[in-house]
Image 1 (cartoon, helix red, strand yellow):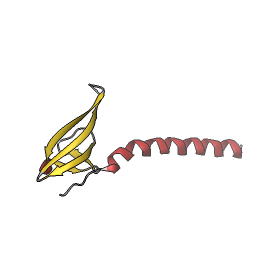
Image 2 (image 1 turned 90 degrees about the horizontal axis):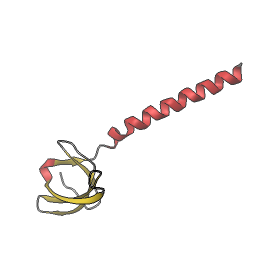
Image 3 (image 1 turned 60 degrees about the horizontal axis):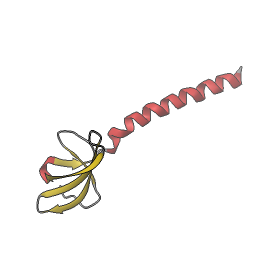
Image 4 (image 1 turned 180 degrees about the horizontal axis):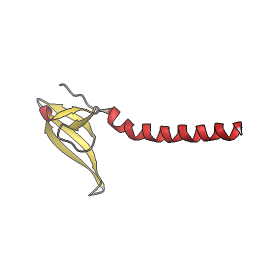
Length: 82
């Protein structure tokens, strides 16, 4: 897979989302925020170890929140009916 500057990627084995800074041959320089250190870090990672960031994985939490919102709306409708 070919990556470009600004792409959001993940290491296939897991970890935080990474932003591609540059690509040279098969080496991808990425930027990420380290919660432990409280600062941004860079890493050079072989392209075969990376995959495009799966935005759907982050949406699972959003879906849960929206279903809670739906329940609140249902309760409001019940209140109006009573």
